[in-house]
Length: 251
Image (cartoon, rainbow, N blue to C red; front, side, top):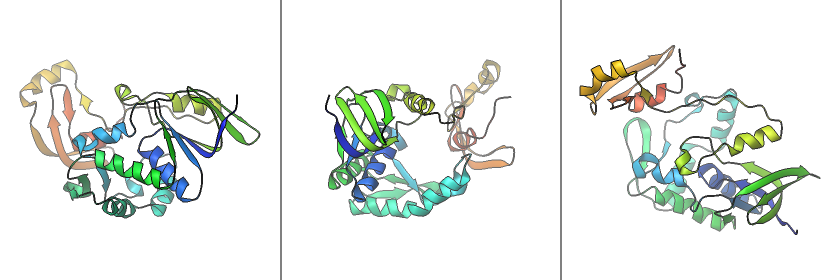
């Protein structure tokens, strides 16, 4: 079977995959992006309550958890929140700042998706949706990817399929399978940026507070966040809880 060829093949048409396609295309690379979904950027669409919290003006390396702290430093030095704001303004997308430097679209998260698609089109990056991947091999310095739409060969392969969160949005463990196949070290996954559930006894005592939000300082070890805390019918949520959940360890 004859294979289609490109310089860069990207698996996943989410925020990371589309931005990668744009940057690769700007460097003169021929790019193809694949996704099994019917539409690109599905997590973008639902982010920020449908208005997409597209960046934070205070974002810096210290805000990211990683076994390699230098990665965030390098990435954010090359492309800053201000760079993305400039892109948003280039496309005349109106936005506003909420608390703590959080930036949201005035209208819809779909504006960000349309912006990314327009930038992809400008560099002639190709997008193929509803395309599943059945096999990935590497031979002779090129990747060969078998898909439901045929075989594609590429010099570089980018796996931007995301994590396992929100399966109903199409999230799978595909990236972990590819990592294992190519002998990459895997770090055990765990939930992060999530609400906390309470045991039934404590939940019953707090049930009258469901729906109430209060200012709070939440800490774990040496890390603390001072933001809103929300009591829910299942436990605790709100910005402070979502932030601290990434640091909390069971037991």
